[in-house]
Amino acid sequence: MRYKLTILNACSAAFMIGLIIYAMTNYSDLKNEDGFGMAAVYGLAGLSLMGGMMDFLLQALVKHEGTMNILGSFVAITIGMVVALS
Image 1: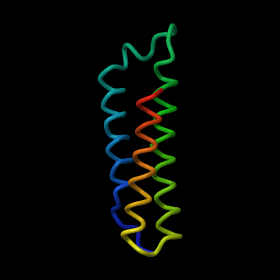
Image 2: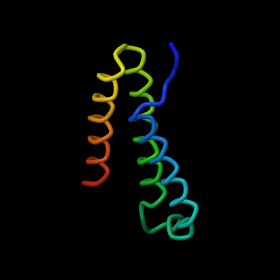
Image 3: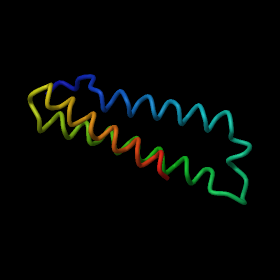
């Protein structure tokens, strides 16, 4: 199996890069003890890693690339909605 670039792993990678940049630029605000800043960053990083693992699993199970991208888009939109509504 060759691991290919799909919509889901591109979205997961872009989300993780954005999260790392956000955490690096706002670390002084996130490290305070009176909030859940770093805990939220770890939770969002977990969502991004879950998207990457789901993409790996989908690539192993689904052979048709069009179906793979449709399923990946659905998962990426679902993860985005979870993040937006939390």
